[in-house]
Length: 228
Image (tube, rainbow, N blue to C red; front, side):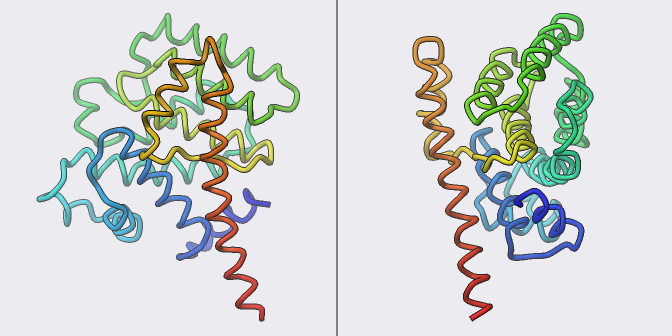
């Protein structure tokens, strides 16, 4: 099972395997979607060293810190994938993502942009979602859409939304998806078309699921070769 594999590799700090692939892949593409300029080699370097200072001359400090923080978000998601989704979990993710970034000076971290109205909207969303007995891939994508429409935070909504979707896929034994930044236009179009055609965004996310499956399958082939 993928969740068990990710937990084991995280706890054992295993490099060059599914856990590291996942961390780098998701942080890299989510960063690109957020406008970060780091290339995959830089993300890999940060994952292995956590030394943002080495790259400060070339990149904004927030791009570096929030990339490192994204690794911690993914650790948190993997550790607590089985818990029922709740506000505390969502706010904790945002805190982890934004901690020690310059953004926190203006907006804080782990807090909604509008405490009363936003909290009510998120609670209603969670009530709807948690009533679903066995969420499907389509249900998770719909949650992702509804979450992004609320935009609960001043910054980082997309990254938090995709991390939550990753968590819920793991919890429900569904292969997760990531959004390749090369397809950002289609991803954005999927949100814009949702009310008239839900299938468009679902198809974009399914393509991201296929891409992640290819990463997992490539590692499986390596395991088979080693056994041979």
